[in-house]
Length: 213
Image 1 (cartoon, one colour):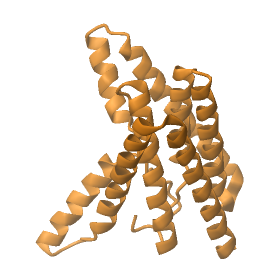
Image 2: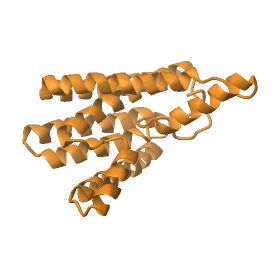
Image 3: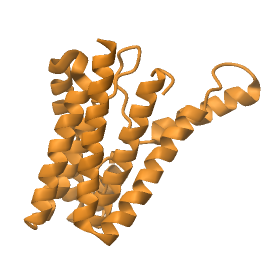
């Protein structure tokens, strides 16, 4: 997060909220699988293989689709150049719309895979000041960085700026809470809000890109 300027920090927070919201939708709809947190799916894959359960195939499929989404997002972002963030978020918006259509058609498995693909694409959207692409749909690395910087603060040396990482984690958690509550209340509303949030982030990213051009 410290690699971003203030406006892009807020955009990253928005993408983290979206990721939490969509991950909660996927978790509820799939009965316990993740569409943005592949470490959890990797553990489910491993346990499924060890126990010879068919859930291993599903977990492996979600992981593969997520990685394909990252590849696709990176290709789109690379071609978009300075408009990388808005272009990739636009693709995410379209994919979430497609997932909603698939859910309406009662195509549960394709819908879940579409959500995972969309979250893979989202991980190619945010670029730091050093040009490195930053994943904001999973929080293990963020929490590790937060822990290291809290230790730095306690030692009184090094980079102790940990609140940015904490804020990003809180954003994803709050998004997930909102997504879980909404999908349990109304599936159409949950998908609609996810699409709306992605669209607003796309517009915000486009505005930021035009401002710095």
